[in-house]
Image (cartoon, rainbow, N blue to C red; front, side, top):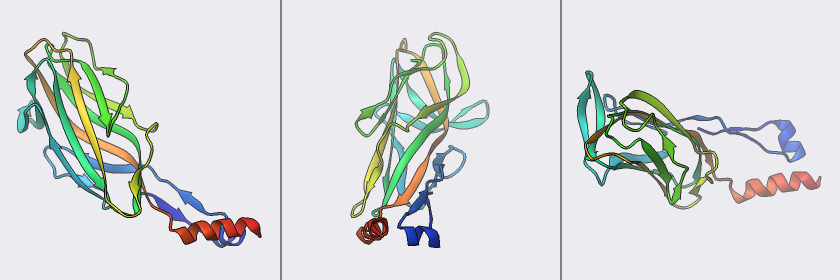
Length: 193
């Protein structure tokens, strides 16, 4: 969550300091309820290929994506009016059977990030953490309306009978208030002194 830092010196000189503190904005493990920053809403998974919750792998509940040459799952949440989100990292744990597609693409809104290969195609990947940087994306948010952010996780390149298991999905970034017009005026007025 973003933290606004102000001080007397900042007010006198007209300089406004805003410190963005990177924090976990979203977390979902199948065993626990969704943890969501208070300025976000939603956070529900949906899929074009069947997503089954409650599937167990080695005694742990996980999200299971449908079998086939490719699978995808989507996640959407919204930023509250008056706030913006600057995303830094998308992280998850994944288990892929040898026949599953090991090529992964994350699409945020309409932006597809570069493809990532997880392990070696044809080999079992037994629970590996994946971290995708999001720092190249613009801020999401609006002063007057709720702003949806959608994430689509897509796996491809499988041979037809692969399985995918996903757990511990987390999104990191900062949430900051949209500055009010009078805050701009105070900052600009201080520069003229």
